[in-house]
Structures are given as C-alpha cells and as structure tokens.
Length: 111
Length: 120
Picture 1: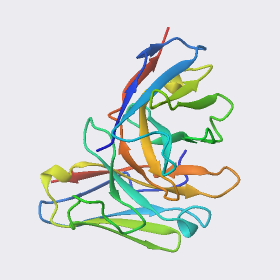
Picture 2: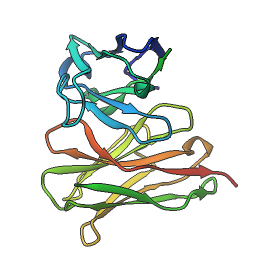
Picture 3: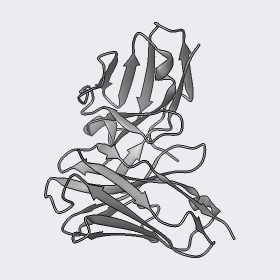
C-alpha cells in the first residue's frame, strides 16, 4: 500500500494536455523533492523529472513537474501516442517507517 | 554510460530464499557518489522500493521487508546482490536494480528487470 496517491488513469486526444497528481503528506512530499518516472509497456521505469521540476538530458520540455505543499503534479503537453505509459511519482518518506516511496501509478491513454 | 543488469533464477520455491545479482558496467560501484538499490513490481501492480546499499556496506531497507531482506556489495566484481528469505507467491515480481546519487532522491538509471516467480 503506497503512501502517495495518484489517479488510476487519465486520457486525452493527441496534441492535448494531461496532468497527473500525486498526493502525499508532510513526511514525504511536503519535505522532500519529488521525482517522476515513465514506464512504457514491457520496459523498465525511466526517470522523467527530478527535484520536483527538473528534466534529465534528453527529456523533452513537453514534460513538466511542479510541487505545492504535500502534492505534486506532472504535466504532459502536446500528447503523443508514444506517451502512452504508466507514470509514477516518488520521494523519500521521513516518517518512522522511513524509506523511498512510489505513487500508486497512473496509466496515460492517448485517445 | 552506466548500465545495470539483473541476473538470477527465474523460479523460486515457496519458503526458500530469492537471490539476485546486479552487475554494474560503465561505473565503479565503489564510487562514493552513489547508492545502489533494488525495486520490485508485482505483475500488473505498482513499484515497491526494497532497499539500498552504499559501497561501504551501509544499508537501508523497506521496513515492511526488513526482516527478510539482505543487500550486499561485492566491489571486486562491481556487483551488488539481493537476498529475500521465506518467499511466498506475494513475492512474485519483476525485480529491478537502479542507481541513486548520494544526496539525491531519485533512481537513474534502472536495469531492464528480471521476473522472479515463486511457485512449487
């Protein structure tokens, strides 16, 4: 059971925009950087966003991240069929049960 | 460019110990700049962090798995390993190894993953 909650699925037409929320608490998102991972079908997760809003080299600026309080958001603009994937947020949890935690995951479907 | 590759048995019997190895190429596992971790994903489900090790041997485990998990490092082979004892069907998953920079809180890159099935 994850401590970070994401919507199970979001969808939009090609070219449109989607946003994915990641809700946590003060022990995780509220006090630590958030990262986002993209998992294309049948492949390993890939880092998409780190430190809330930074993109690794090679990640297009269609992908963006933000954080406010105990929630974070991933945005994808100019949606492409190749963006169909599962997306996970992740961060450190500083509570008694400390450790790295992932979100529940969101399936993005391009209509 | 650093690459990570998991290896180990794809089938483990219930109550036995799951053992996997991650071989690192393109970087030294003895670097003080990185942690090395294990993450798993049951079929059709989300990601779960298992634990992380520093080259010195310091380890950090998921509290929910801590009693059954051991992660170790072999600097001479540039590898780190995972042992999960007393496995059940609930431990069936794709197991990934990944790198985390010291002081940072994200994993990059990841290995391709290896499916381990627990079944008699």
